[in-house]
Image (tube, helix red, strand yellow):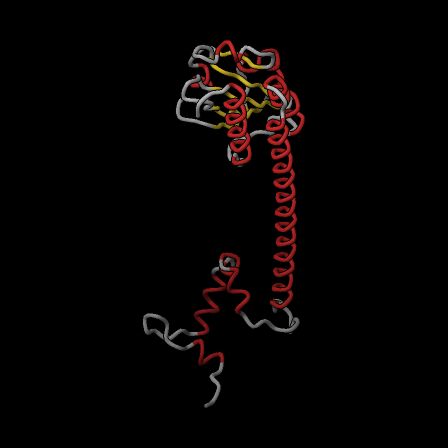
Length: 243
């Protein structure tokens, strides 16, 4: 069977049964020079000339090569960004897991609080870490320990909203009630609600950074929520509270 010529192929019927004329195609492309830019996927389907064949003839092969080189370079950049993000995630995971082990390994309640309010901030590159609990309930007196900040009832809902368990955000007005004298250092924060026990008021882990981009909405919260659960369980154990 004879091979169809390019002209015969171009004149095959379109979807509506009308014959496609090569001159019409050429005229359309001349009238719409942006067509290939708008449909770059078509470039890979074209059969380009090997080199310039005369004045005014576009070297499609060179165009396609440059396009593919650009795609390869972009792919390399994307891959580098992905590897960097993976390394950052692994580093964050290692730091959070290390902090969790230190909290669990504390020899007493006071040491656990010190790990949370001092060592934790260093581990996650934050500037302030505060462990807070709302005043009232059976744990009030037992919670009055160095490093634990007592909040007025309802403070956590006012700071976070009643329907949120974790918030990462930039802030121009960090809560003085939460951070105390450390509030001026806070330009971004991570707030994690602590549900310690049915018999106790709610708690709050507040992490603040002077870097406005350190904690931002859209960042993953799984590791921080894991840390919050570890703190809940450990506090519950030290204070002898039911789950």
